[in-house]
Length: 357
Image 1 (cartoon, rainbow, N blue to C red):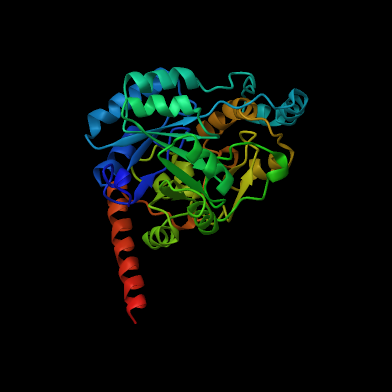
Image 2: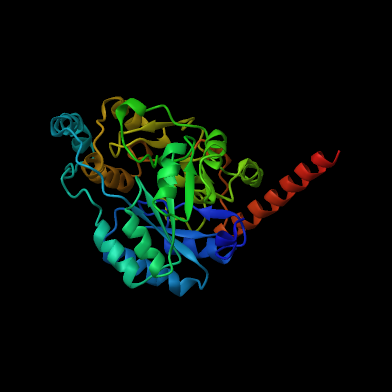
């Protein structure tokens, strides 16, 4: 790995920041203590909520960690389309005996307030999703000693990340679970995502900053593959959803390997932005009609997802998962890191032996 990364974490393993309650301090601490880089997800939290989790994490580990922020989104949603979708979801609200959320609950996710906290109380790494932060934001984080990671889903986006002065680009392949970190949300690009190995190769030829590869990675051999393609480390999300310390709902953990959920697909059903989830009833019935309206749709469906969780109904949950979900292992997070490191070493040995023939 590049020294900028090895100084932070000895093993090329980053735990993806998963918003919605999965990336709790206990998970991040376990990963960091095992030699990876644990992450907190600030998305959907208040600035104070984020700060409290940072304080809790610092009480659990002395190792470096990261915090992820969502970039504010432009006001491009069609209010009429959101209203139509709300009408379609009325039956869900009735079924779960709840009200739909207010789609205008907020568009910026408290971005400025969270940045202010992170500048006053610096953390080792801050990463960004859904766009590129302004150069002055990256510079201000650098001044307080924070490294910056930014997600990109194309080589063009990766070049924008480098121009902004970020330290690391996270190349996110279409295989990744959860939200695609595209810099612009365009309906015409739905379904045009790039596979991870092709993306890493393209980004490697486009930028000079280190690459962290993300998307469907569940085994150490896959980490070896993306590193051979040009990445310096791998970011794993779904692999850690099933970990003992994960804050994911028990139904979510079970669904990863439940034959009832045979596949994943990118859907706008829950949030209005493309995100990869296990296909359940909600995705089948509403995915084809969900508008491009993030975060309005996220706010609209939030009470439905909460009610489905309370009812123990996996068919109404956002079961975020990457394409490798069937390979999930229910282990303590630290042990999972150890297993991945052993698999990585074995894969590298096999590659070296093959090259020596």
